[in-house]
Image (cartoon, rainbow, N blue to C red; front, side, top):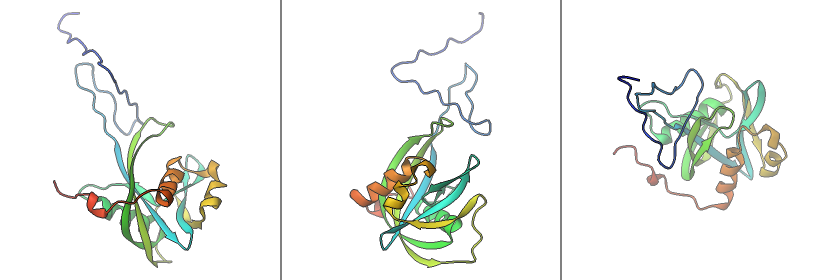
Length: 180
Protein backbone atom coordinates (compact mmCIF):
# COMPACT_ATOMS: atom_id res chain seq x y z
CA UNK A 1 0.00 0.00 0.00
CA UNK A 2 1.41 3.40 -0.89
CA UNK A 3 2.42 5.84 1.87
CA UNK A 4 1.94 3.26 4.60
CA UNK A 5 4.70 2.98 7.18
CA UNK A 6 5.92 -0.56 7.82
CA UNK A 7 5.21 -2.01 11.26
CA UNK A 8 8.34 -2.56 13.32
CA UNK A 9 9.24 -6.19 13.89
CA UNK A 10 8.75 -7.52 17.38
CA UNK A 11 12.12 -8.50 18.79
CA UNK A 12 12.18 -10.78 21.81
CA UNK A 13 9.29 -9.68 23.98
CA UNK A 14 6.13 -7.89 22.87
CA UNK A 15 3.54 -6.56 25.27
CA UNK A 16 -0.01 -6.17 24.11
CA UNK A 17 -2.10 -4.76 26.92
CA UNK A 18 -5.83 -4.41 26.37
CA UNK A 19 -7.51 -2.45 29.10
CA UNK A 20 -10.98 -1.22 29.90
CA UNK A 21 -12.46 1.41 27.58
CA UNK A 22 -11.84 4.13 30.17
CA UNK A 23 -8.09 3.51 30.12
CA UNK A 24 -5.41 3.03 27.48
CA UNK A 25 -6.04 1.66 24.01
CA UNK A 26 -3.61 0.55 21.37
CA UNK A 27 -2.72 3.47 19.15
CA UNK A 28 -2.85 3.51 15.33
CA UNK A 29 -0.32 1.31 13.55
CA UNK A 30 1.97 4.22 12.75
CA UNK A 31 2.01 5.35 16.40
CA UNK A 32 4.14 3.70 19.09
CA UNK A 33 2.16 1.65 21.59
CA UNK A 34 2.04 3.08 25.08
CA UNK A 35 1.90 0.93 28.18
CA UNK A 36 2.17 1.69 31.85
CA UNK A 37 1.66 -0.04 35.15
CA UNK A 38 -0.90 1.33 37.57
CA UNK A 39 0.89 2.35 40.77
CA UNK A 40 -0.88 1.27 43.94
CA UNK A 41 -0.06 1.15 47.63
CA UNK A 42 -1.19 -1.27 50.34
CA UNK A 43 -0.74 -1.31 54.09
CA UNK A 44 -0.39 -4.21 56.52
CA UNK A 45 -1.45 -3.21 60.01
CA UNK A 46 -0.95 -5.77 62.78
CA UNK A 47 -2.39 -5.66 66.28
CA UNK A 48 -1.84 -8.62 68.62
CA UNK A 49 -1.65 -11.20 65.84
CA UNK A 50 -4.63 -9.84 63.90
CA UNK A 51 -4.40 -7.89 60.66
CA UNK A 52 -6.51 -5.03 59.34
CA UNK A 53 -8.40 -5.88 56.15
CA UNK A 54 -11.03 -4.17 54.07
CA UNK A 55 -14.28 -5.74 52.95
CA UNK A 56 -15.18 -4.12 49.65
CA UNK A 57 -17.43 -4.70 46.66
CA UNK A 58 -15.70 -5.77 43.46
CA UNK A 59 -17.53 -7.22 40.48
CA UNK A 60 -20.76 -7.57 42.45
CA UNK A 61 -19.26 -9.55 45.33
CA UNK A 62 -17.68 -8.79 48.69
CA UNK A 63 -13.91 -9.34 48.67
CA UNK A 64 -11.08 -8.95 51.18
CA UNK A 65 -8.01 -6.81 50.64
CA UNK A 66 -5.45 -4.88 52.60
CA UNK A 67 -6.23 -1.17 52.80
CA UNK A 68 -5.01 -0.21 49.34
CA UNK A 69 -5.48 2.16 46.45
CA UNK A 70 -3.99 4.22 43.67
CA UNK A 71 -1.35 6.88 43.97
CA UNK A 72 -2.83 10.36 43.38
CA UNK A 73 -1.02 12.99 41.27
CA UNK A 74 1.83 14.74 43.13
CA UNK A 75 1.43 12.41 46.13
CA UNK A 76 4.25 10.48 47.80
CA UNK A 77 3.92 6.72 48.14
CA UNK A 78 4.00 7.02 51.92
CA UNK A 79 1.29 9.68 51.99
CA UNK A 80 -0.88 7.58 49.65
CA UNK A 81 -0.61 4.56 51.97
CA UNK A 82 -1.59 6.58 55.05
CA UNK A 83 -4.47 8.25 53.15
CA UNK A 84 -5.84 5.02 51.68
CA UNK A 85 -5.75 3.30 55.07
CA UNK A 86 -7.75 6.13 56.64
CA UNK A 87 -10.22 6.38 53.74
CA UNK A 88 -10.92 2.64 53.66
CA UNK A 89 -10.80 1.74 57.37
CA UNK A 90 -11.07 4.90 59.47
CA UNK A 91 -7.68 4.12 61.05
CA UNK A 92 -4.82 6.61 61.39
CA UNK A 93 -1.55 4.71 61.01
CA UNK A 94 2.17 5.32 61.16
CA UNK A 95 4.24 3.57 58.50
CA UNK A 96 7.13 1.53 59.89
CA UNK A 97 8.72 -0.20 56.88
CA UNK A 98 8.40 -1.34 53.28
CA UNK A 99 7.31 -4.97 52.98
CA UNK A 100 7.84 -5.32 49.25
CA UNK A 101 7.30 -4.06 45.74
CA UNK A 102 5.13 -6.28 43.55
CA UNK A 103 4.19 -6.45 39.88
CA UNK A 104 0.83 -8.11 39.24
CA UNK A 105 -1.23 -8.48 36.07
CA UNK A 106 -4.91 -9.01 36.81
CA UNK A 107 -6.24 -11.96 34.80
CA UNK A 108 -9.71 -10.38 34.70
CA UNK A 109 -8.68 -7.35 32.63
CA UNK A 110 -4.98 -7.64 31.75
CA UNK A 111 -4.09 -4.48 33.67
CA UNK A 112 -0.67 -4.53 35.34
CA UNK A 113 -0.36 -3.08 38.83
CA UNK A 114 2.81 -2.12 40.65
CA UNK A 115 2.02 -2.43 44.35
CA UNK A 116 4.21 -0.99 47.07
CA UNK A 117 3.25 -2.68 50.33
CA UNK A 118 3.99 -1.02 53.67
CA UNK A 119 3.87 -2.18 57.26
CA UNK A 120 2.25 0.21 59.73
CA UNK A 121 1.12 0.45 63.32
CA UNK A 122 -2.38 1.52 64.25
CA UNK A 123 -2.55 4.84 66.09
CA UNK A 124 -6.20 5.79 66.43
CA UNK A 125 -9.57 4.68 65.10
CA UNK A 126 -11.94 7.37 63.84
CA UNK A 127 -15.21 5.45 64.29
CA UNK A 128 -17.32 8.23 62.71
CA UNK A 129 -15.12 8.48 59.59
CA UNK A 130 -17.09 8.15 56.32
CA UNK A 131 -15.43 5.27 54.44
CA UNK A 132 -14.88 5.33 50.67
CA UNK A 133 -17.71 4.32 48.34
CA UNK A 134 -17.78 0.55 47.84
CA UNK A 135 -16.16 -0.19 51.19
CA UNK A 136 -18.35 -2.38 53.41
CA UNK A 137 -16.10 -2.01 56.44
CA UNK A 138 -12.84 -2.86 58.14
CA UNK A 139 -12.24 -6.26 59.68
CA UNK A 140 -9.42 -7.69 61.81
CA UNK A 141 -8.42 -11.26 60.90
CA UNK A 142 -5.66 -13.68 61.80
CA UNK A 143 -3.66 -15.26 59.00
CA UNK A 144 -5.58 -18.52 59.46
CA UNK A 145 -8.93 -16.73 59.27
CA UNK A 146 -7.84 -15.08 56.03
CA UNK A 147 -6.55 -18.38 54.64
CA UNK A 148 -9.95 -19.98 55.31
CA UNK A 149 -11.58 -17.36 53.04
CA UNK A 150 -9.38 -17.71 49.96
CA UNK A 151 -12.37 -17.42 47.62
CA UNK A 152 -12.90 -13.88 48.96
CA UNK A 153 -9.38 -12.56 48.33
CA UNK A 154 -9.39 -9.67 45.87
CA UNK A 155 -6.23 -11.21 44.39
CA UNK A 156 -3.45 -13.55 45.43
CA UNK A 157 -1.44 -10.45 46.40
CA UNK A 158 -3.50 -10.31 49.61
CA UNK A 159 -1.87 -13.45 51.02
CA UNK A 160 1.47 -12.89 49.30
CA UNK A 161 1.91 -9.50 50.98
CA UNK A 162 0.82 -10.85 54.36
CA UNK A 163 3.18 -13.83 54.14
CA UNK A 164 6.05 -11.57 53.08
CA UNK A 165 5.28 -9.35 56.05
CA UNK A 166 5.43 -12.37 58.36
CA UNK A 167 8.39 -14.17 56.74
CA UNK A 168 10.58 -11.74 54.90
CA UNK A 169 12.99 -8.98 55.68
CA UNK A 170 11.38 -5.55 55.88
CA UNK A 171 13.02 -2.55 54.26
CA UNK A 172 13.57 0.95 55.57
CA UNK A 173 11.16 3.66 54.46
CA UNK A 174 14.30 5.45 53.22
CA UNK A 175 14.30 2.96 50.33
CA UNK A 176 11.67 5.16 48.66
CA UNK A 177 12.66 8.58 47.38
CA UNK A 178 10.04 11.25 46.69
CA UNK A 179 12.30 13.53 44.66
CA UNK A 180 14.76 12.67 41.90
